[in-house]
Image: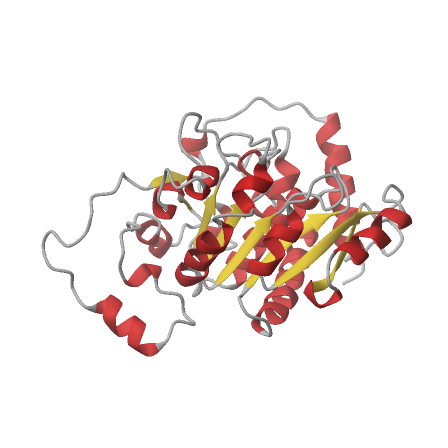
Length: 314
């Protein structure tokens, strides 16, 4: 996917030259909820206000028929525990610092966003061949662009899979970059690390977005000993994610600096390696392949590559 990464490089260069004041998020409407003429689709507004309480909307499309039938039955009064109001996030569409991580939302009709959607269709096809339907995006070391790829892949997948439920999860608990990448700021609220610690239910950590079908689970605080959490409750949390969603995209930690990725791979269907062209070392990438079983890899995304780019190519 060299053309995608080349466009991301150009976007970053453009971002570094531009300083634009932050505009109010309340004035924006999500571009994915518009048609090319700019008119907002009414069904998007109704879908994004649904509750995350147990019900039909939490049943993945791949769920067995008997489970879907149970979910469609009305619950008796008092049978559901009370839960906090579901958090909602309107993805910002301005070009403030970090916007490249959500380029597919900021510039949904750009060539880069179109290529990301092609990439998302291919990744979805690969995930359909695996069980469970989840992908861990990782890299050899930090700073190779895995969060940018994770967020844009989730946005692109949601745009081509509106009938499916998709979760974007921050599993890089030592750096917690997904919230920043998707433009979410809500300090003092629990995150996925609290779910792993057993202090919060999964549904209470969920943030629903204005992208129909897409939820994300941010990490609220850094965890220095993340391997302790991932080695314990990760299996249970992933089982619940797979129960709730059709596809799960995880921004994972890098492989070499910390022991977290081998603790996560038993619970996902596959891994995608992000490699920065001209910066990633061959020896580091070879070591990554040796640390994880070959069967877990679905491929590699070469980031910041200019070699495959052709201007004007369809």
